[in-house]
Image (cartoon, helix red, strand yellow):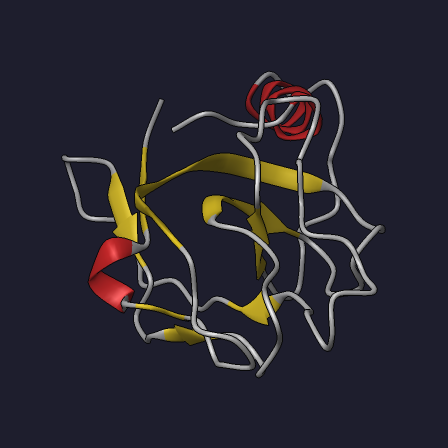
Length: 131
């Protein structure tokens, strides 16, 4: 699972006792038209209707496999998408254009949601694996 530059530093600081990063109180899933990287989210930006990040709840990681999955479907608000959605990110805040990207990746299949529709990510498809 590709982590962001921010999350990589936070994990090293925490694991090596160099610093104590602040733990997010909630996680948010964002979508992108492009391919996100560790330093560029390529997130859908407003104004695109009512696009906003959606809450993503995770279950405890499986042991020893190191895989965590969402424990509920992730439903985005109704919005008009102008292109194919191909990537995702996990954030520590909801407002688009703010916060720290923690992880990112590509959807298993790029999707063009119908106009003015909800986009739903099935819980079983939101998987995070250990590095």
